[in-house]
Length: 195
Image 1 (tube, rainbow, N blue to C red):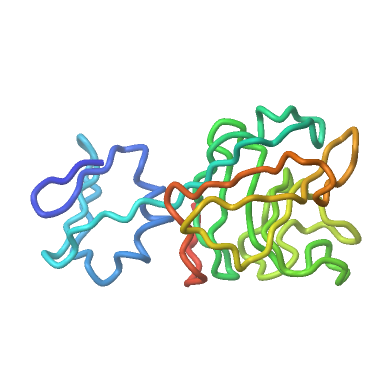
Image 2 (cartoon, rainbow, N blue to C red):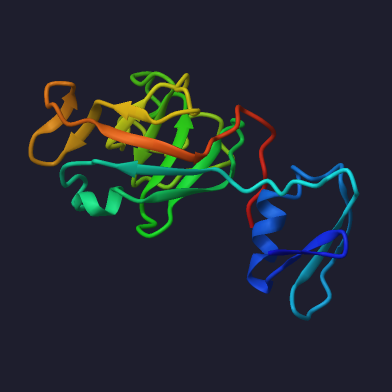
């Protein structure tokens, strides 16, 4: 995007992403949306809105092992927000290896066996669900977990993760995984509708 004439110019490929991720956040400051084909899509904004809010991005580093038949290189990557789920939390998807997801959900597995946590998982979420977003019944597909009260103002060190060869690590192995928020997730807020 680029700022032009009191708004910003979106490339054609960004139209749906803008409508899905940002329209709700700028609802009070957007004065018009011009979708006329051309160099891009112009979104006129009021003078009060001077700061463009980019979506949160998380980065995982230090995952040491293969998991769910994927090498550690597929997990050690950046994850960008794809929108806000019905439970009010950001949902993230791997930028390079897109089969990995990060999301917060209650009752993963649908059987009451898992407390509300953030999960790294190859199980795509149903963003319209407020609990058990992975949809699996009787088991929670995930490879890393961390509590919702993490402090995203700094890097988060995670000790609980899964390796195909060794199973779950709960701190027995010395090498932790680090999650860094390049742009921190915001606390729960209204869901966005993805297209």
